[in-house]
Image (cartoon, rainbow, N blue to C red):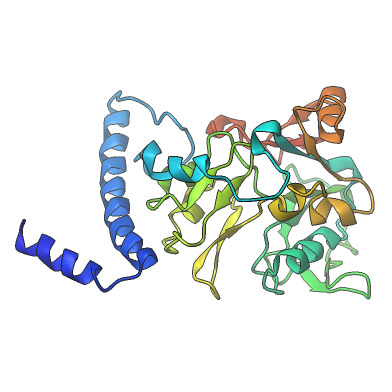
Length: 302
């Protein structure tokens, strides 16, 4: 054992499990970044492609790092996660941009009540007369959102009232709970893992707040909770769906824009939505295989 190894072992003896995992995780993450750099160079010269697709370093988390978490699902009475495969649908033609979904999500999941922290959000796409590309307004931009009415805390501003608008629409966004999630691939401690029933979950006990997952997500669906110091994302209100309830955003949507259900049930709302409509996913070329399906998605979006 080297002097450096002895020093690390001594320091680790005084650390909590989370801090110790953080120490190891940062080392693994740095090693992963180096491996990723080497792989990128190899790829440029005809090397093998990243098997999981997506972005970020090509370092792939060893399966044993998070296999234990997958084998031991959350202890939820009367729920078997092998009997479900959850999925989400968004009917773009129905969304009115009321942002009730955003507020409901924040209240249900104790997300900070400001415009910079969201688990789900809505984007406004506006085509002005004579322009080929849409103006994209997000709730994350403070200039685009103003104080709401008594129905909702936030609403989009009326910046286009004096301009000729050819077309405008809203697109609801949230975590895609990918089949091949980049966030799981780059997590150095196994805190982020893919659940058997579909959602990508975070075990905050093991999250060290390194934000590799935030950078790796091609959909911008992750953020850092600055109060807890851990990663945060939409999990389709896992605490609700495992009790037979709908996600909060689905429950409050006044137009039926958001559709949720079990793909193992052919009669579920989401199964029927996918079967009866032409649907698309966001950024299919990334190879993440999202589980949020959109109807009426404009080419400017994906």
